[in-house]
Image (spheres, rainbow over the protein chains, first blue to last red):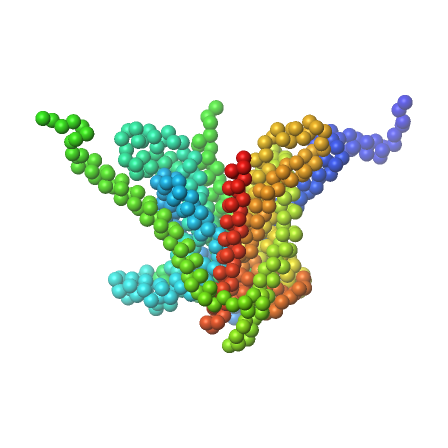
Length: 329
Length: 290
């Protein structure tokens, strides 16, 4: 016995049947759980979108006011309301690259030491210590850098280097203040060593032992088996780990703010005070308003985009590296 | 009388490679020691500069005027606890729910995309999250507040909790779920009461690690919760916190306040170390049991 249905009722019925065809769960409580959990995941994604949107809308006044001059000028003048972020881009990249230069060999060395050379007890101890290095908060590194490392560099390292290379050598010139690009790079290097080292450890552990054993069978010394069997095979993975470390270095705020000297300018000496994108935000955001605030928000947006793309790039490289060792069907 | 191969002297090419081999292995050990040295230096100076000056005043009093004895950081310790409570209340449920989603429905475009976003959100510079919360909450509320600081920390916590929850829940073998479903238990009950509750120890471990990471964050609090010289119990007033107070004291030129910064840093590092060591010990005991 079929009831005759009106058109809206037919539409509701059709919609109901359509939903029922595509629903994943059958029980009502399961459907509620499914909806709840999906809703929160969408909310999570919307949070990320809101973040980007908010950064953009906070920095829009500066973008419309200055246009491309924001990128190309190094004038940062709150008094005349004239802003250009080139000095911070220079500071960020120089300190990060210098930190990478220091940290990469040490991290690869630590990772190789832990996977190849160390005995079990030493391995446990050292891996625990390296993880503790990662757990120390940034502000504590900044405190230590400002009150211990900077005076040390001021009284011992910089005069020593200036004595060897001459006072006017462009890389080391400048009065010994202690805080500057070099100190910041050193602190950043200390902070990214655990990141790069732990990822490198995972990479070295996934290299098949066959590579090393083949080298040993052909008469290689222990180091040669490591270098030929492990390092050569994992170059791309190590490269990904280094890029990940660079991504972490770019975002370091507190330790850098405390030891970089906070001078909004570009200088060639590595002992000169400088400013990075993160440190200028930390320093000036609280007293900023209007166009100044908007320019700082633009610096934040730039920092976000650079860090985001660096990390995405690094994960892509590491993912492609792991594809190398999957089973070939 | 020719000697056999075991008695002949090694030729020079072997010696050169041997020496290089020993040298490079020594270099590896040297690098390992280089990596550990900063830890020893930092912790050593921390202990050296803070422990001789630890007094009970530090834990009970709030900031004293410069030059007066008996100042402390009680307001910062309390403020950190307040911020962590709000961050946990906001961040942990959301993080666990997204982690449940990623482990229960792992196939398809949307879960892969959410996983990718969560991974990337763990590495956003925390100061950018501070700017975001400033734009959304501080401007609307008209001032710095405990709530906006807590929200900033929660946003940092959510991707961390998501990732660890997902990893932990994925470790449960599929046959446990199938057994639960075969007994007629609803799917959500299988997920929440069997899988999640069954691995609650690991999930709590992940949450503790996220809390340890977030407790040391300074940058997002600089312009959301700002700072406060006194104890504050209100949700809409700025509140002090341990890392921010350490930063504020560290950049002053006064000896007494720098000492307070060292003591605060010592407490912060002790807290983070204790959480990490407790997590490791609990993981080890679980491995022994299985």
